[in-house]
View 1 (tube, rainbow, N blue to C red):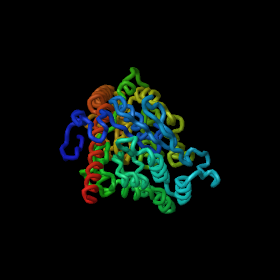
View 2: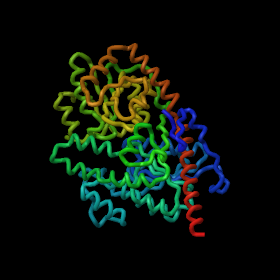
View 3: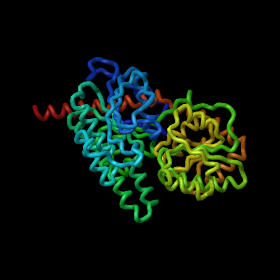
View 4: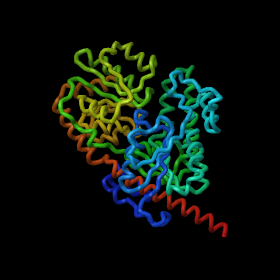
Amino acid sequence: MGCLQKTGIQLPYSDCNAFYPAFGRGHGGRWGVRIALLSYRSKEHCGGQGVYVRYLSGGLVALGHEVEVFSGQPYPEGLDPRVRLTKLPSLDVFSRPDLKLPPLRTLRDRPDVLEYVTTATGCFAEPLAFSYRAARALRGRAGEFDVVHDNQSLGYGLLSLRRRGVPLVATIHHPVSRDRRVELDAAPWRRKASVARWYGFVRMQARVARRVPVLLGVSDVATADAVGDFGIPPERFRVVPLGVDTDVFRPRGERVPGRIVAVASADRPLKGVAHLLDALATLRVDRDVELQLVSALEPGGPTDRRIDELGLRDIVHVRSGVTDEELAALLASAEVMCVPSLYEGFSLPTVEALACGTPVVASRAGALPEVVGDDAVLVEPGDAGALGDAIGALLDSPADRQRLGAAGRARALERFGWTSVARATVAAYEAAIAAAGAAEGAAEGKGA
């Protein structure tokens, strides 16, 4: 694993610190960088992107930089006090109990109308509408920032910033084209058209990503997938893994016998929870087991129904909206953490489990082998039998659990620190600022 620098040279993650830049030109002699960090959704229980915003912004201000987060709902919580937050309210359709669009009379501006119309057609509209809100918010403030960093909205509004010469960086956690592919394969014929409409924004993200001069990927696998799916030149990317707070996510003593934990940021086929439930049904035949599932399940949805079909309601405990401290305590209480996903661009909960010294059983899918290395048990994705066998073997072997738990903790400490993430990210900012300066110089040369 390594940091893909613009030169194409690969370095170990521990060497990312060497790329911390010394700023001068274009920053008025200041040492710090002024960063506008954009995120269309930022609350942590919405997935790894919310965690990314909180910890990256905190790491950046700890290094002496200035950060202002621009976010739609749900807004981030627990930001470092030195990080400013500017709220860009969306229609927030998915927080409404009935998931219905708001009355037309409540629409405030053009981005609201755009979000309303796009949502009404069945397409996920938040990234597109947010990008225009962010562009409008920055229109009169571009001089207050040295760089704009987009957290995977990749909406058309970013292109207006690009045209004005604003230095631009974007993080692609993984190409959402992978989610679309899995959901289309899993959907019955009567739903395939609606699934395709929902993922209509993916084409926009590919088009915008191809115009962003500097991109961040969180793993080699996710980066390669984005290059292939979105048609992006590979030299645009730098690979900077996510981090983990190893003071919060740590071993905590006694574990609950037979407890398995899984975390699914979305109730989608991509997360493979159905395969874990099938494995659990087999495991309970001759073992006393329970599953703590951290996920916001759709009431009456496929996962919820599968729990009842398999008669697992008494041993599957579902919770959502947990804090970092609650998640850390839960992971540290388990004998096994399971990641049954069919694809992951990184999987922050997996690293959090490693940091807690909790043995991990994961699918050999996406970036998961890259993240865990030799310090977890890997099985073929979608194979419930192999998943059950691997979990059962660990539950039956305290020695293997001890060995994997210690190795996982060591791996998290060595490779996944947020300070290194922040420093390597600043190196990407330096590249974006230099690219914008070069483009401006070229434009002035042509006009001379």
